[in-house]
Amino acid sequence: MPANKLNDNLRHADRMKTHQPPRVPTQSQPPFLQVPANFGSARTRAQLDQSQAGQIIPIPAPKRSPSVLGLAEVVGTQYVEEINQSGQVVFHCAGDTGFGAPWDVELVAQVMAMDLHRPNPADRPAFFFHLGDVIYNHQYNMPESKRNMYQPQFYVPYEHYSAKIVAIPGNHDSNPQEDPKSIDAFEANFCADPPNSDAELAKLLNSANRPPIYQPGVYYRLDTPFAQIIALFSNGGEHEGVIRGGVAGDTQWNFLIEQLTEIKATRDTGKRLGLIVAMHHPPYSGGGGHSGSSTMLADLDAAFNEAKIGPDAVLSGHAHVYQRFTRTTQVAGNPMEVPYVVAGIGGHGPIQPVKPSFDRQPVRTPLKGRSPNGVEDQSLRQYFNGFGHLIVTVTNRVLTIDLIGTKTQTHLAVDSVTVDLGTNRITHETPPFTHPANGEEQHAVHAPKGR
Image: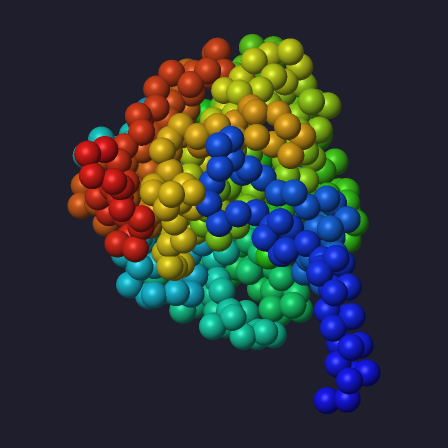
């Protein structure tokens, strides 16, 4: 190499020592949970929009207004009357089923079906509320038509699950990059048009196959005798949830305000039902392959504060692991302890465990969390690195969420939390336990001896 060329190279090398860009790890979250932990996201709204460009769709308008679904439309008036007389409503909940190891998906469905035969009829779940990602692309091929995926990925695994199933779309049910008509396929199965003739109705009632569900839209309110569920569509983004603004539009957020305001007015008259808000993407997450959605959380908080009413529980999926957070907050001056539960454990795998601590040991709970604005109002109370499902029970006094592990070989709850609806306080929760727990995935990080 000529001397002048060598000197130029050395000079450039010296400049690089001074002007090297920051290392990549400083721009991303560490692969472990710190104390206090970041259970949200550092992305700004502009960064989020850029990172999910092409994945967000305009939110489809409901097929009827208001977008409210009565439980009698799902399970029938006689069953609703039985629920009223029993003094409680019970339902299943989980997300992220679809394509994966077929045995895991089917095993979760089989264990859920066992709950339908509980000795006390009042304890049997009345329906399954699916938290999204009903289906997945095969090996993530893109684009790939999803029209024919519901039969093998949804109807077949739940062939022997006799209860009705309602759902909200997940990102894999709606991302246009995976299929431009993803959301159309979801609506065909869950927001179908009711039969328009007696002949069509008779054919439907006599069919041995699971019929489609007639939800009013991809976002809606589900009214049951003891609880109301506001089901939100958090769109097709791979990273975080979006419930309003930009391409998505503001119609859903306006619906959320309207429903919260109506529920608040009813509650002011003395009628107090449990209030659950559900969406696919989690507001908080410390594992499962996905962070929490801080921008979406801010939008939810804005709605709660504008309507002067907060939820009794928030349910979500997306992250492929079970996590239970407690958020201590105030809405309209009222202190609240709210469980934020992530249950993306419906069978799509593999389970992606909660991040370990810096010394590569299992995370010890409770672990305090710090939001991007510096507020420490949430904590990770419990997690479970295995498949399973939730059983939610609501009476006129309390709301209880139980986690049933698929591979724990017991019908007893792995984790449980109870909220007093009168005081908005958590009155019972499962204490922290050693990991890996019975039924967790074998690749989970092992606890140190003597713990």
